[in-house]
Length: 182
Image (cartoon, rainbow, N blue to C red):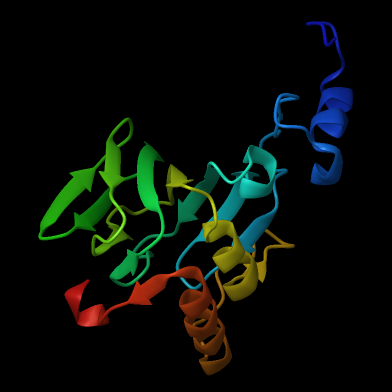
């Protein structure tokens, strides 16, 4: 049993052990900046907990979106998606409606709904993103680049990255729509 006097480093080492041995009722601790991270063309995704760790129930990540960043309009055909804004401001389109979300705001988007978001501020926007059920983490693992250097910034959208995004989307039940709708 952990006590309040346990060393933070030891706690992080225990909690961030390989997910192979993680049991659903064991719990998990992710120290800031230590979860697996991936760079996409418009944001950085840091995994907090995955479907492998929750029996497929939920995938939660932190998204860091640079100014003017964000994905084109798309639809998740298998998962509901929720956003909880922690920093910055985002224009979040859900269906025919756009909301301007600020810190503390929450947005829920049911599966099958066209949506996208764009950072409208001058600094990075950060939000907690939850997918239910889990599964979208596989899209990020396949389509995005591992963020070894988190200060490097997102990669440019190249033909190779676009091909990865389209291939992973088809497998993950994600449908990208025309960027003009953004």
